[in-house]
Length: 127
Length: 409
Image (cartoon, rainbow over all chains, first blue to last red; front, side, top):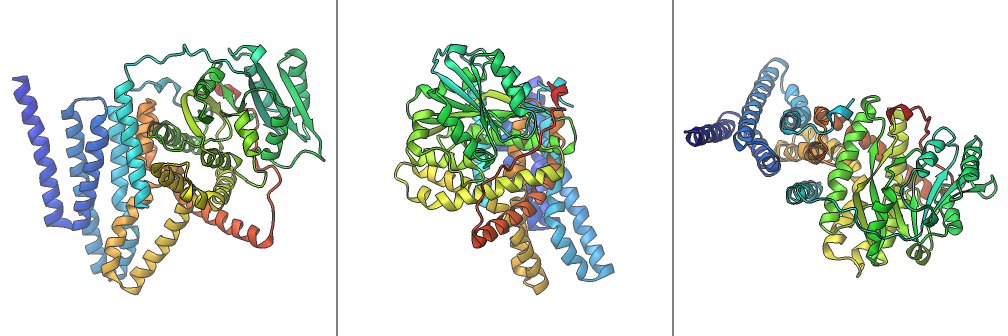
């Protein structure tokens, strides 16, 4: 029973990730989809080698995808709204800051995931 | 830039795989390889920290009949010489080489060469005056010299004053990424681990064969790394040989230190890049990694330039181009964050060290990288200016130490 439940959870997480990728491609833009793909590739090849259950890691990965999707959606909406209010100049500003904005969630979520998975060996020495 | 991203990715995965394979294997301290060792401590105006290191030298577990500790008091104007003399009076294996204003004060490389002449050990180790090593560090560093092809060995510096402020925490993250993952992976992959000039050592006969340190170099350690490799010897990394160091604690000090490193590294690149490319003693993978290592400090300059190019493209209206460009830009930025180690490399290093709380600061390493873009650009301009004006570097360029970090020990 436990085994079946675990498999069900794994399938649910995997589905969530696939749905996020499809939504990013269909609803937002190609750049967001590529960002999510890179995030997924890094996460699966690096973080999946760390200690912890597969479901926990898959859960973090799917949460990362959902956050990334919403993050990009919010900023794309902001860009569209800004362009209609302030004109095309706003899109230039958005394009300049796009790399910083888009990847801020990747790095933040990455460090958060590592902190959640890490065995705190040296916590007593940390200031 | 993508090449660097791939390189760091390979390093991270390599270290993770190795960690999984070896985590259950006991670390052997059984190797009984006791060559005669000289420890060189170049010091200029270090009276506030030199006593701490010398005290530690008296606690080393290496047999004192095979150990020589030589302090090179390089024309200090403070009490460095007196502190060292006091230790030399009490302990037979500690010696002091005093250099006055005429012979000394010409830079760390010159001081090291003077120390090298006076030293007697088969292996020569170097420690900066602000360092605080493990008591068995000599055994750990000497162990790799059992292989006659090894010319130099590098240990791992660990930041002592990490909790002091945000700058020291960010430097800690950079050091973790750089040593726990980067150097470790280079060692595992048979590439070129970098000799850092401190917490490390070299074989005396190799050094004599190579003619000592190049005194015209600002980063004589990086220069030595490539000189040794080009001569057909290996540089090894001994990650278990740990030594505390004082990290810079202000952005101003960070600027000065990194400016020196960047300028020196660029100097070394101009000196060795072609030799590395056409060397018959280096394998193809060593050549590729060596060239990437040599060009490391040019990358922030390229990033800054590409940012301006990207912005210009946007304003010129080449919208087809900028979409693709901006996909690469964030990757480049974040792949090179910190001491040019990417966020995932730093993150894995912190994970392997069990530094849970420090991991939350990883996004801020990006600030350090932004700062490095300015530092490296200034360093490159200064290097060109010095070339044009024919200026030579022949004085000490060092970080000030105040000894108030003893409380962290």
